[in-house]
Length: 244
Image (cartoon, rainbow, N blue to C red; front, side, top):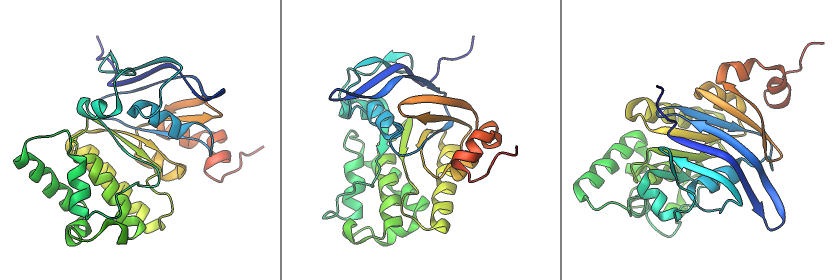
């Protein structure tokens, strides 16, 4: 019998007031996968991640981690269960240092030696953060702040890492470097990654599988290469026109 998915969304509905943002979406993420969620602005991608992390309360359906319902569990407790998010816009604490921001990411942990070991590993992934560890985070460049946001989430030692638009506002070379680091994190630690990203080409090159959302619904899903080859995806997200 195949193992149950690590993360499952089953007919998930989310509302903002009377406006329904997610219309009963279902998706699965298996242990060790990188799964990307693609779609235009307003498709419901960030809403999906915020529901998984506990920042939004679903109006229907179920979120399961390891086969167990998670939607009634507060956001800070979901971090303890192994769900951590690097949010859209980075949301770092600008008046705290790099070191202090990383420390906040480990708020659920008590083992100081292991926390220091994780921080050393993150400095290895992002050497510029070590150089700037005593610098105020608000003085970092956009790319450095994105590295810090990912590093802060990794300080929780998550099983599922939620990344919301990590390429937003970054130069292409920096996007490439950050995506290479995401692949390295996945391959060396086995951490599962759910990636929301408007840079569809980069996301599909990185991911194992993907889902395409439109106005709160999943309209396509499949292996990343199959989505890359799909004429609808090419036309809408990859800048290619389907041949008549």
